[in-house]
Amino acid sequence: MQMVPWNLVKSWLCHSCGTCCKFYQVVLKFPEWLNIVKNFGVAYTSPSINRFLLGKRSDGSCVFLGKMANATFCSLQHAKPQACKLWPFKVLDQPKYGNSRYAAYHYRNREFFIYVDSGCTGVRIGLPSPDFAYSTIPEIIELALGVRQKQCKSTAVLP
Image 1 (cartoon, one colour):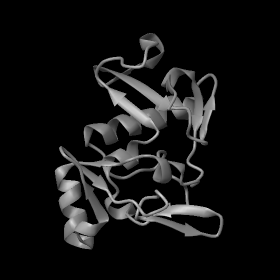
Image 2 (cartoon, helix red, strand yellow; image 1 turned 30 degrees about the vertical axis):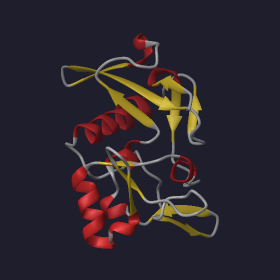
Image 3 (cartoon, rainbow, N blue to C red; image 1 turned 90 degrees about the vertical axis):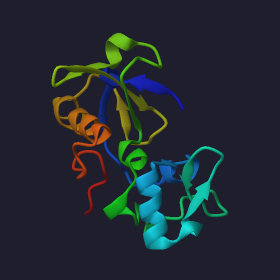
Image 4 (spheres, rainbow, N blue to C red; image 1 turned 135 degrees about the vertical axis):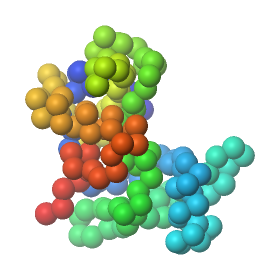
């Protein structure tokens, strides 16, 4: 995982490659865990000492990762955990991965520090495009704050 400040990212677009669903553990908030258990059963989650995780298949992929032709998709779209909605972004109150000047983003009289996992195949490094800076990043912040549930710029677009 190589985190880069948002201001060094030209754009991001989900390619539905499924990498995030195969190589990362998804930590669930208690209400998310409860919703999954209620709708699918406890076998779709994995307990840890101090947190709840999304379940994994024997190949390491998420139990909700689906595949159609050459694309993958999340079969939890209607109830996707916040961690999944935010990936590959990290929205923080304080700088954590350095370059705070490039990570800072001012949104509604608050300062956030936004980092992007450059291991995501949809990340393009460069000068931020206006769409990325003024549409994608605010949506990510709103998702992190819980004031937005619906994803537009921060998810794969169906053909």
